[in-house]
Length: 344
Image (tube, one colour):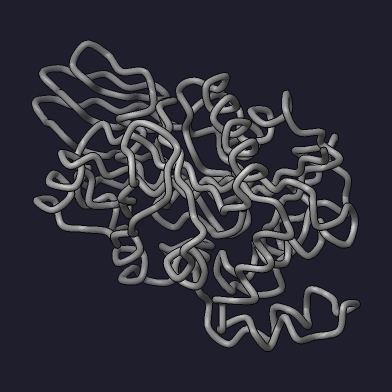
């Protein structure tokens, strides 16, 4: 049995502005531990996947820094996406690459580079359980995280059985908060974006359902990445193009402390807190403050009598917003004068 891992590490992480930039996006930043998120992700997989069987898909401009960050991974395994085309294209190209190198029976585990995981050992155990299920049933296996709260930032999965591996009944797009609470109470799972399948089974479902990739899939077998990605007109997710259309999808419930590190506010859930729920980095002094996220890589920050704020001090610029508004930083960046944006 041959096992591969695919780590999706594209994007610029604009919601971590001003720290995250196109040349050093969030996956290259030490936001959860003292290591960059991408390094945490590959270290987490290393006990079950050989670095020689690990593919990292990223932006062309990040190949060199990722190569420096991850020396055990061969250069040819760090794949530059010529243009953003969505997760359907990225995972299909990864599957085609694995098929060419190792055949259609190879297992493919897919994760994203920007997650926090509370229990690495349990995470790996669920991945191996998913691999066994994928080989036994020839289904596309997704890991549905058991929700710890109602969250409107995630999609949801309805399993046939909430407590064990079972066929997927349906996917639900990101709901409002009331619906999210209802779904959580009814046993729905968070759509984590963790996938396990054999390359052959996945490509068969892509060819059957992903009409958006039809032109790319019709290219000659020796077509390169530029040709493949250029043949895809509109970016589309693997969920929309394949999983939501297929009747051949299973889900395994996961309980390993998963969180998507998508905004500054998320650090309030995944980093160590003080007794009042504050998460800080750098020289920070607080009095009568609760549930704040503060990052200062220069200078000092003093806060008094404020709650639920995000404060970031970086390279002479100070960002102040609320934890709720932290998810919408792109709007702020777009409104700034050019000289204030940096390379965001």
